[in-house]
Image (cartoon, rainbow, N blue to C red; front, side):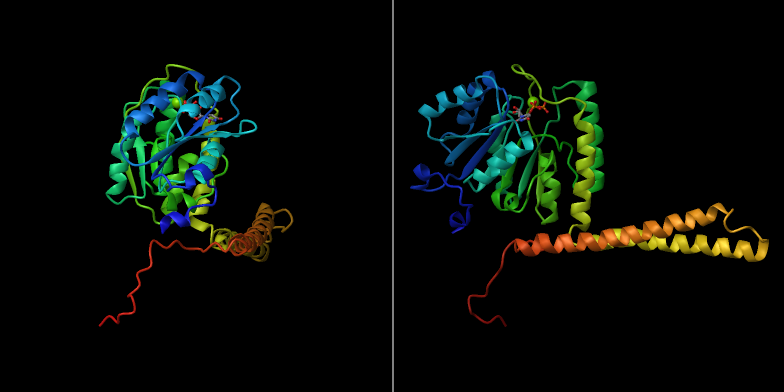
Length: 337
Ligand code: UDP
Ligand code: MG
C-alpha cells in the first residue's frame, strides 16, 4: 500500500487509524491575527470532503501565534503544530511540513490570508485530472507594484526561460503536490519557489491554475526587494542541478576544453608573430592571454573532476538513483505475445 510507503514521521494518536488523504502545510512567522480566520477558512473549504490534517509550522514567531495555535488545537485533532527553535525561513518551514505530512496530497498555503483556502478543492480536482503539481497563479495580485510586482514579473519570466518550466507565478505559495514528487526533492536556501522546476527534473507533470489573491489585512510582509538577488543566485543553482547535477564534467570540462583551445590558439599566435614579425614574445600581451586560458582550462577540468567525485558520493552514499521511475508495469507472470 502506498500508505505504508510514507515517511516514518508519524504521530501515534492519529496513525492508529488511517492517514489523512490531504495535508495542508502552513508556514508562519508572527501571524497572530491571521491564524484563527485562516483556520476557519481552511476548515470551511475542506470539511466534509477527504480526510485532512493541517500542519502549522511556527517559524520562530515572537508574538502570540503559538498561543493562538495551541488554543485552536485544543478543539481540533486535525491540527498539528511544528515549532521551530528559531526563525529558519519559509523554505525551511515548508520543508519541515513536507517531511512530517502524512497525506498523499500536500497543499502549501501562506498563513497571511493572501491565498484563499477556497481554491484548495479546485486545485485538488485539477491534480486528480492526472497532474503531479498544481501551482497557483495570482493573476490579480494585491502587493506593492514597485517592490514586489515588477521584480516578480521579471523573475517569473527569467525562471521560465532558464528552467524551461513555463509558469506565470513561481512565487505563489499556494500549490498542491503529490507526495511522491516532494519525497524526491531536498530544499535549501530560498528554494521553495523552485519546487516545480526541480520536480520537472523527475518528469513531474505541472499545471497552473488562476487563484484568488487578497491584500494583507493583518501583520506585515516579511520580504522586500532584498529577496531579488537571492532568487537569482538560487536560480543559478537550480539551472545547474537540472542540467548537470549528474554529469558536472560535461559542463566544467566543456568550458575547460574551450579555454584550452583558446589558450593554444593564442599561444600559436604568439609564436608565429615571433617567427614572422619578430614581435618580442615577452612584450606580447597575447602571451598573458595564453597563460590565463591554459590556467583556467586546468582549473575548470579539475573542478569538473572534483564535482564528479562529489556527485558519486552524493548518490552512492544515499543509494539515490540518477533517474526517477513513475511506475513499473509487471505482466503478472503471463507471457505477452
Ligand atoms: N514566513 C515564514 N518564515 C519567514 C518568512 C515568512 O514562515 O521567515 C511565512 C509568513 O508568515 C507567511 C508566508 O511565509 O505565512 C509568506 O510570507 P509573506 O506574506 O511575508 O510574503 P509575501 O506574501 O509578502 O511574499
Ligand atoms: Mg503574503
